[in-house]
Length: 206
Image 1 (cartoon, rainbow, N blue to C red):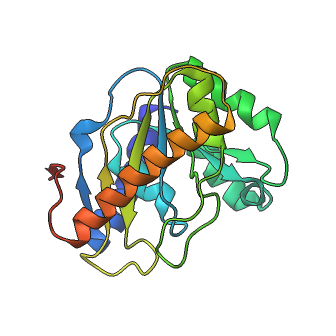
Image 2 (cartoon, helix red, strand yellow):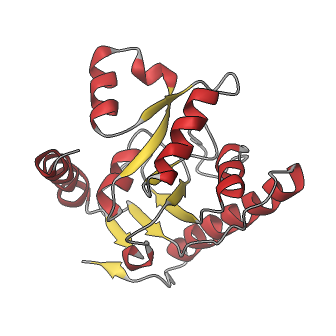
């Protein structure tokens, strides 16, 4: 993606989320500025990918449900932003190979580990994908807590970026996957709780 395209969509997201809704971003200084990274946010609404796109300092290539690539308009937007399709009904080897290739090229991979949007606001079950890829590659996971993106009320939307969670390269056994998922999920829950209790540890990005 060229610099003009990046400037264009970042400006659009800034206008919508920062100017329009007063989005607060915490912990931007936690994000690694080089090397491969896996981003795992919680998932509340379709606003989550563009919120991450604005909040994170590097371009994130999100796995997106295959249905978003059926409509020509949404397919164009997703492709333009660097997203790629995932067939959630089966083990999508093509999507996994693409994800591994992105990490090999030192890019940022984004995966919503819950899979579906959690309208209740509570964290849902984490699927195996993000943890499995992290274990197979030894790439760290950056947990991201998104707050208020379902109702989108002004000054009640926030994105908190956690510190990278190191993952040792090893076989992706069910036990190893659960251990990684529990750690990432626990950190996201900690950040959500800290926001609601007005004790966010991460630095507010102006």
